[in-house]
Length: 257
Image 1 (spheres, helix red, strand yellow):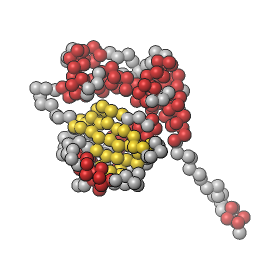
Image 2 (cartoon, one colour; image 1 turned 30 degrees about the vertical axis):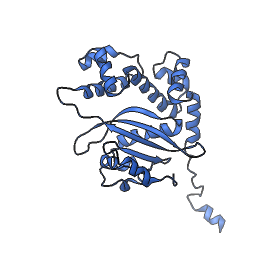
Image 3 (tube, one colour; image 1 turned 60 degrees about the vertical axis):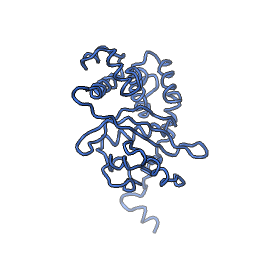
Image 4 (cartoon, one colour; image 1 turned 90 degrees about the vertical axis):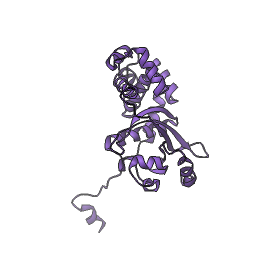
């Protein structure tokens, strides 16, 4: 990451004043950002972000969520696109952003960081509450990761038909409700695999009909099988901290004397 032309990247991305952009290293420290990202973080310039992490700028739950997505990209080596995320309030007004995250690789093809760019959704007026409807439906779809897709019931809760809700999703996210539902299942599966849960049980917990269906869908979205991902997470886990074996009563010091 040290060889990255940070100034050039920042200059390029500053040409997109409404699109927050950042690059992080493997420790999830910011190494590049544009002015739009600085505004989102509440700092005067991008340089104020460098070397710091999301928790320095966002509430703890949001920071933890953002970094979980970053780690997913680092672990899988695959991009995440069309992520609808609610940002912290900027100027007292919360906003919705569509994020795309992609791995940063070195000359050897090894993933050494993560880059992201987003675009803000315009706030709807009262005559066109499409975005709030989509966000409400998205939350319902994500919370139902362990159940079959119930689009008609969700549409009724949002006060529209299932076909209208599908059109809303296509307009705002360029994704279908089914794709959002599947992504929610895979997101939960990634969490459970990272916690060490067995693959067969993860498939059951995430509502897949069988192990093979889960494996096919997981591989299509993540780029590797659930078992391969679980092994990679274990390899990437930090080594346990070595503690001192010095006796508490100072006997060790006495022996060295």
